[in-house]
Length: 293
Image (cartoon, rainbow, N blue to C red; front, side, top):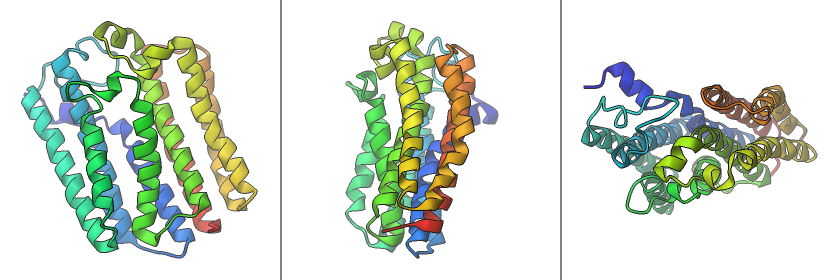
């Protein structure tokens, strides 16, 4: 039976910046539009955090029963390391999805954006079938597309819509930036796992591209949000606050383009999550101070 500490590690708390970032940026955009809705923001955060934890457990379960996680570098896999029964980990994932669903329904009822129920259902299905089901799309190189859509566009713009209504162009730029940096987190993870994923038959985008091109993809995903920051600063000067995260980005680019591998990429994965959080927090402040509809 897994200990509490092992369950916490299995939930992969280092991935939580991917849940917090879209809510930060979306709430910043809502504040800039003149809307203060702390209750809605908290509910959006509960949805995001519950979904991220749920998808981590779902991936642990699905990869574990396939044997993909039998030989891994990185955080503890509950099923792959045999410290928890697959059915128990699957139940933990379902509980996470249920919490996200209940918080989401509450948020939808308060904002009266009923069409978002369908969006939420698609998000939960996307989370499960990333590595679950007979043909998981995460095994076919489509993980980055899903992450960009769900964590970037849906996460940020959904937060805006449930607080202040239709998003403006700067909110959309923020959503794209969050999506790109969240993809960078996934790419760092999959770059580390190329050798074991190849053996297990998990054809992630990193496996399909190979080591060198995956490092180039990571660099592009990290650089592009700062290009967007500079361009958006032409429209609203406070958006340039996002550039404050640039030193952290440069540090990660040096590591990845310098050939970091194996356990060294665990640090890159962690710090890319921190980069995402830093850029999102600074961008959220910029949106709140100078949002232009």
